[in-house]
Length: 219
Image 1 (spheres, rainbow, N blue to C red):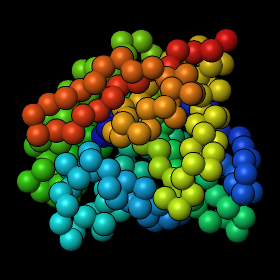
Image 2 (cartoon, rainbow, N blue to C red; image 1 turned 180 degrees about the horizontal axis):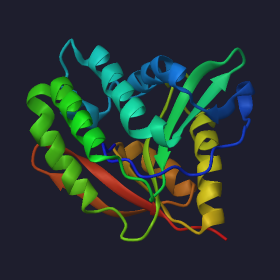
Image 3 (tube, helix red, strand yellow; image 1 turned 180 degrees about the vertical axis):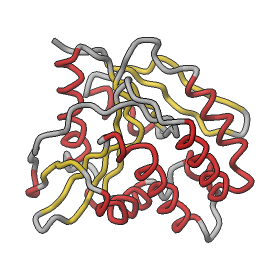
C-alpha cells in the first residue's frame, strides 16, 4: 500500500466468475462499500496491525484508511476495480495503477496530513516503511498492485483472480511487468500461480515481513 499514485491501467472490462460475480470500475459513490470490504479483508493482516494497532479503534480506522487511499491515491487515476454479486453487492476491491501519473504536490501534502491524523503515533514508522518499499520498486515502468481484498466469507472462490485478470491482461498487452507487496505468507502460492515470483523479503525491526513480488509481462 502506498500513498504515491502512478497512473491507471486501462479500465477493466466486465469479467465473470463463479457465483455470478462481475468485475467493474469503481465510482466515488462506491467508496463506503469498497472501504468496508477491504477493512474486513485486512482485519487480521499483520501490516495493518502494525499501522493501526490492535485496539478497539482498529475496525473503524481501517475503513477510514482505505477510504482515504481510494479517494486520494487511486480513484482520481481510475485505478479501482470492484467485484460485485447480482444486485451490485460489493464483495472485493482491487487498487492497481500504472507508471505515468504522480499526484500533485498539494495532493501529496493533503494526503500526508490526513494520514498523519489517522495513524497518529504510527505515522512516522509507516512513512519509513513506505519509503523503504518505494526504494525497492522495479526500476522499469510497471503496473503497481497496491491492494486487493475480498469478503472473508468468499475467500478461495476465484474472486481475487477475477479482479486481477483484466489488469494483468492489460499489463501483458502493454509489455509491462506487474509488482506487488504481499503481507501474508499463505498468499504466496496464489500469486505464484498467477506468474509472480518473490524477488525480496523485506524484514525490518518491529515491522512485519513483506514479500516483494514481480510478474514479467507475458506475450
